[in-house]
Image 1 (cartoon, rainbow, N blue to C red):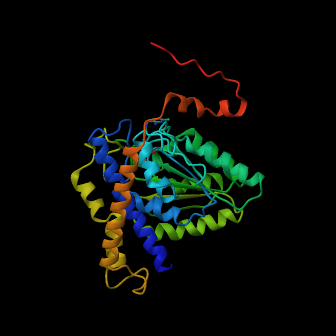
Image 2 (tube, rainbow, N blue to C red):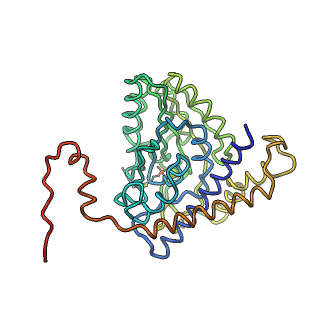
Image 3 (cartoon, rainbow, N blue to C red):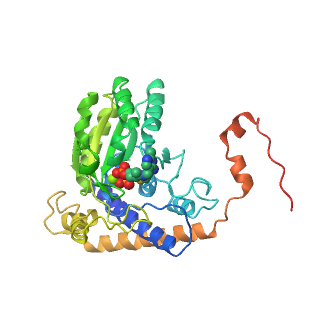
Length: 340
Ligand SMILES: Cc1ncc(C[n+]2csc(CCOP(=O)(O)OP(=O)(O)O)c2C)c(N)n1
Ligand SMILES: [Mg+2]
């Protein structure tokens, strides 16, 4: 790995953490409403996988998707403006936190329904096969979604038709307040791959370099036409399920133990320490570089907030113009503005 690539990954880890903390703060201050599911603790998953993606690869994700959008290249200001429900948001301010979308960057949506991502992913992948392209679809989902019918149906179909999909399970051990062993007969989700005749692997989702390495290898195979694969990444969320969740079902000791070995702590230990087990001292990041990166992401996030705050709310007519049926067929009649 080149030093610049490593630097980019560490920068995105820091950006992801800071963006989410700042979004949580703005939400607590009443700057915007709706649901808000934050990602601290899980950053190495999105960053490691998406640094192995090509710009031509597609991404579909869940409601916990801000970081996936950011790392796929959606500008931070447009993501923040969407959380604020503003016109310059990446979904025109009409989707909010759970419905980010950016066709140009091939970020094909956050989805609020558990298990909704799978059929969307295989539909896009089927389009890639029809056009004989060497592109991949990366489908992120939580371990809670692995017991939805759409998981089984979609993985079966993906394998049968050799669709180019990397299914990425973000196993953070909890589905809101239920721990995985209470919900899943087989909590090691990657082992289910054999039921569909596809390769399945798991890796430490707290270690960004390990994630990157396995995702790169799997994606290369998928783009080369080898069919779908299932990757399970073991991780943990440091905050509640959403801003409405105080997380009383987990002990403080458990949360603290994960925090001590979180993705940013790993970076500090592995990349900054004088003896670098992973990369060799020639590309290791020093403390000065780390501080520069922290300063850089602070500026990016504050600029994103300023951008969001300066953006107006969408007008009612924006919602009308966003209807795809309107654009394609013009069969619907715009309602007369109401007076009084
Ligand atoms: C079909 C469906 N059922 C229930 C819900 C309510 N719900 C929202 S998130 C969630 C838990 C999902 O857990 P997991 O897939 O592990 O994702 P995580 O939040 O841990 O990232 C549930 C049950 C929903 N959104 N959709
Ligand atoms: Mg979960």
